[in-house]
Length: 119
Image (cartoon, rainbow, N blue to C red; front, side):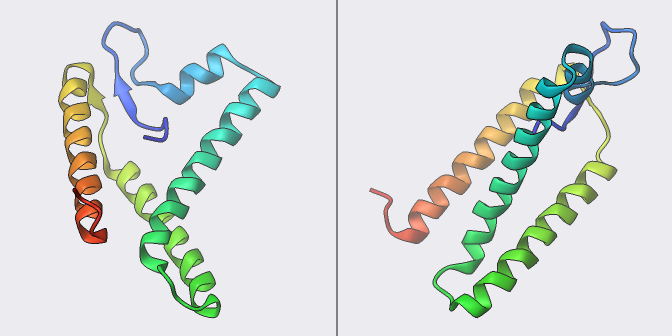
């Protein structure tokens, strides 16, 4: 979740209501810059966490280029997914949230099992 998912709200007069567009309407100047900066920082931190799954305990001369390769791959993957994904209807949001929560819990417990820390 990086505050970038388009969601269609049929109660508004706008064709597509996005979280980002509401931020621009409600904030401006320094506040908007801070919000956009923290959103981009959060995206970069998600990419760093994902790249650490691939790096492990590799030597430094291998891990630094691999870190940037995974970061670039993460950014490309998110861009492709966002460009081909259609907007969601408000009625599908609970289902969308349930699926994301279920998948994240499966990944969490899978990582615990792989690391041998699942009790």
